Amino acid sequence: MRRHRALTAHLCRLLESHGGEVRLRSKVAEIRVEGGRVSGVRTETGDILSAPIVVSAIAPDVTVEELIDPAALPADIRERYARIDHRGSYLQMHFALDETPSFAAPYQALNDPAMQASIGIFCTPEEVQQQWEECRRGIVPADPTVVLQIPSLHDPQLAPEGKHAASAFAMWFPIEGGADYGQAKVDMGQRVIDKITRLAPNFAGSITRHTTFTPKHMGVMFGAPGGDYCHGLLHPNQIGQNRPGPKGYIGQPIPIDGLYLGSAGCHGGPGITFIPGFNAGRAALAGW
Image 1 (cartoon, rainbow, N blue to C red):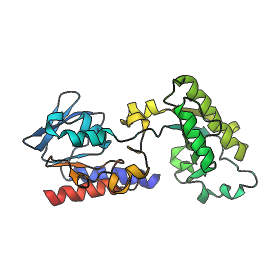
Image 2 (cartoon, rainbow, N blue to C red):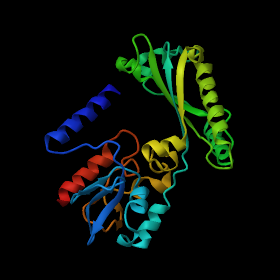
Image 3 (cartoon, helix red, strand yellow):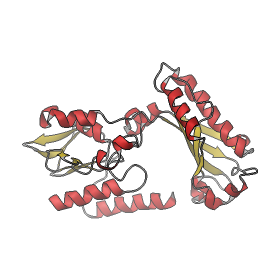
Image 4 (tube, rainbow, N blue to C red):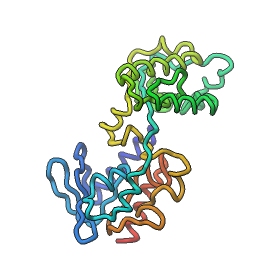
């Protein structure tokens, strides 16, 4: 976690040292296209930023469908991006803890800090499938799959001295089927806490504060369609050649010069792999 934060700060300084500018809370409303190539962007506040190259790090379908004038793209390309599946609905929780979780037998090996960067608490494949089917019907999974992370073990600055910060995400949060959204948030959050506590009995009692983010929060805060921070589910129809590259899909490139895709929804993503951005950067330099 500390390395990722240091890397982000370094990249910002590197950009600024070469005359670049980082704008926070400046949402792009349009990627401007003139004569078959990008000319810059327009922000929600109406600012026009001219540029011969635009690299989009948001979901590919949002880039194509919402930010580009439909007249600038063939209908078949727009239709393909419209088919990207975002139904992977996650619940994200963040915890302030008085102490680290202490895992009981037979999971004592997880008490090693080296094991606590990411702890997957999975069910059987059949149970995960059942959870998926239940969420599609608006039912909160009875025993959700959970991934727990305790980043303060490796970056003590994330919590007060002697305390810890933890995060967990769980699958699958019901966004279809007419579920009571607020109650589903409460119910699933409690089931996440209960599941971790079954393995680490001191977990629930050590929580001093927690917050819960649903797919709606992810959509508002990060622009993730349907709360899908992967920018497209990872299944056979959306990996490999079925995931776009910097210029779009193989055999069906986006016919706009100067536009490049580099988000988690591109080949090499999701996750902190840096591959989509690396590929987009190399493609932009090659086309410059």
